[in-house]
View (cartoon, rainbow, N blue to C red):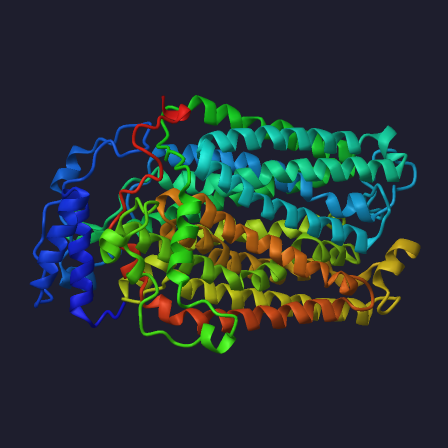
Length: 628
């Protein structure tokens, strides 16, 4: 949207008003009549009448104070400071569930590299070193390439499964029920991992790796179904959908912006993710070191049981959006209809500029009596689908970002093992990443973002994502330089891992040098990863939120598949090239991301304030079991 065009902003504000105080047909007529008369940028404040007991809610929406809310005028949209609204308490319970799940996931995966790569220490039957500083915990002794390959497969599998979880949630089960089934699957997977790490099984490395792989696959199914649905569930607990004016105690009039509130929800959601991550990783690394890998897999499994417990006791307090049946098919039919007359095997014709707007001619109002029988939705839903597809397009650059992030899950842990540890386990250093997030998230939310809004700088989601790409590139430059000096100063030159395995010799560089890599990586997550959750939620149609979230997560799976092509670089003497190439790709991703999305960035307010569709996806007399 062009902020200098008053007519555009006027249309957005009017649409926001009428969404709240008119039924669908009446709303269309009133908007059309009003917009034909628009000749001034000024819009009078109009009292908002919210929808109560919205469809799909298991908890009635009661807020009598909302009857007195006012929407901002055009001038106020441009000049008043925007603030986040109040976060409901149910969102915090969902965040706690995410903390428990991330504790179990990261606590388990934190020890994967040592479990697969390193051999059993002398005199150990469970992989523990019993506190000996000169030894690294291990079990199967299959080398760095095997550990990198399996950890990349785990990332790929865990991030492709959200597509299945999203499909089941949006189409059939709903988010809550899908989450509960996913937790059950993940618990089975965790249990099998515990079995793979007990001493009698570790004695046979080939049997142990088979058992481990089965557990990995089953756990990934549960993790995927959980991830694609827990993120929309927490944001759905906040019910406001349009900005409104509030007068602070100081007398200042501000705009309570739902987009700013959702951004805050996901910042603290991500904070809880990283609290769970750091607690799980630190404790399990020491469990691995002093007791054995079986305990590192058992304790996260126990922690995971808190997830279904909390969700069960709060189940009647959550706002739940009902599954909507054939909405995916409807979206595909709509896209197919819009492509008629545009699709061609001739690439010149396919990509030729078409003056006709892509979606306008397939809206029900445009088709009139010629619209197909399957077209049971309204014009607003067409706009929401178009917006959701734009969000999916934004995520296409993310594999290059996740390629840099994934280095922290495998290669950087191996790099740490070859450095001077000073009694610190090699797989404890990567906790500087979640620690940096825990420190910087409140700083960004309470200081940096409010300051930028106060001085009038609109740090939009797409700007934040672009900054995240470049910060990830800087992190990989730091990793490249570190690896260069590991080789340069080590006794074995570019065979650092051979030196460690054969002579227990470490490069004389302190492992704490890696702090810069992990801190920059943490900052990049705040800008890119947190914002992807926010963007997926705010741009998706209400009945396709899990799907758009799953598409965002799938980019990580795609990145892991790309990472498999780099496994050949994940060994001495090529590790400097590994980090350097990843750094270059991160910068290319950032440049490409901004060049392809800077025009979309100008439409941020317009996309956030689209009139809401009333399309439910299935007949009104359908009753979902979750809401009986």
